[in-house]
Length: 108
Image (cartoon, rainbow, N blue to C red):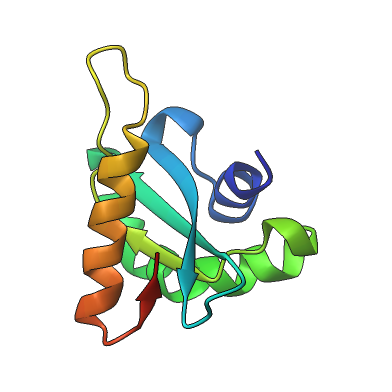
């Protein structure tokens, strides 16, 4: 909810214009989970994606409490089932692939 507020208030987006999912992954550390955010932009905000990519992490880190601060953000489709629920295992696998292509170590 805190990260959604950043998109709505700082970037003037409507909640129906995007989807957001958060998972914890051990990136570069065997002991601490990193906060990994996936944003699925709707077609209406395609023109704002560059701005979001450039500014979302900084703005979110300034505005949200420490426990909610994102470490990584990516813009991609969020896997869901037929009811619209997020498929966490698929999201986790997709995010791991994305981080590994950036040369980051992921711990299970």
